[in-house]
Length: 148
Image: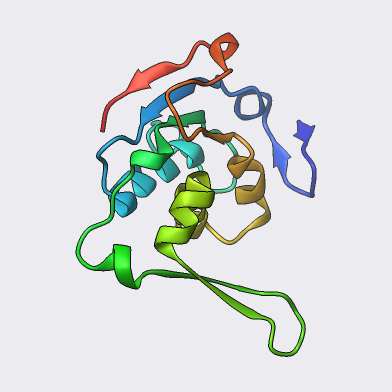
């Protein structure tokens, strides 16, 4: 038995799960549908050995984050909300502003919202890499190109 960070005991087979890296192209994809597929891969739900309490998910590289699209009037109405912790510290940022300044955050935020609210998902989210353009610096992981 192997003890991971926390109190969960893992068998050797599950702890040494084979990890792969997948390359997803976000160009022209709808935000929510794309994020749900990526979250499945991060959690490991695409494998037959899926267990909810074991991190058996794979790594994900996303390119062309700036070319993701949203449907309907979301481009005009969608707002990202954050709170500083101070009185009157509620910050609302429109979708267009976020897309211009930090397009990676849009996809990261959507995927984070689809992950379970547990400590395990924090470790699974660390296997997510998002790039605004075509280029990425993770050739050493030998990513498998995936189509959605």
